[in-house]
Image (cartoon, rainbow, N blue to C red; front, side, top):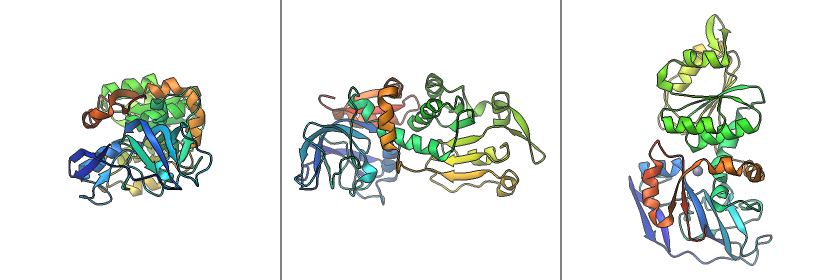
Length: 336
Ligand SMILES: [Zn+2]
């Protein structure tokens, strides 16, 4: 067996691996599809987590078939098609713990049906099932934006998370979504998922580009655009300040991107807008809702997968995932 592991800054390898035995509280899942995440690439860049130089097992977006079930585990049977919720495992799968999904057989410690092991609905492939984790992140970001049908929303960044946000917004009847991304390929995907417009952030100011779409007004003696909510899945250092300078009264701004450095923004200017600034991380409650929507949205979900590679080529997959042309890079195993 092999396990994708970070050894240091920019040093990631497919190591030989022998899986620990399945304990009475554990389950072993034969992996079928695992998505490459932007966080995987960040972990490699910094050389491992929680601290650089720590050997880090990668892969947290996994789906597969149950191979072994510990004696104390109820509600899960050998042969079940399942999604793993890594946030609900004590072993931090793929995010600093001893196990990661980029392996042939994953040990899920303290397995619990409905909590960290979730059934894949009938008729859903492992590839779509493995999209559960990033789609849950996206749904949580949308939930934190408190939007309702008819709202005018901006999504910054059209990587897999931003695209997932557009999918959920449109699904909830928020049809006036304007997306921003530097890459034309990503803007095209945003439009295909139902964004009203997808714009190049360098093509003009927010006011000039959003005004004709969301409308303009005045907020405390300065011109503003009538956007109700802003979801930041891009993490560009200028974004927050740019939004503060054009926001309408009482809009909402949700940070979901990982900012690596502190940023400056004009709090004095923000005062008069009463803008709400908040953040969203992970998916404390969203995975079951994502799974329930899969039968309805499976084709849209599959359209976010831009590349599929066999597990043996996972190192190439990491390179593809770093290019702006890609959306979700899916690693597929035997029999996926
Ligand atoms: Zn992820």
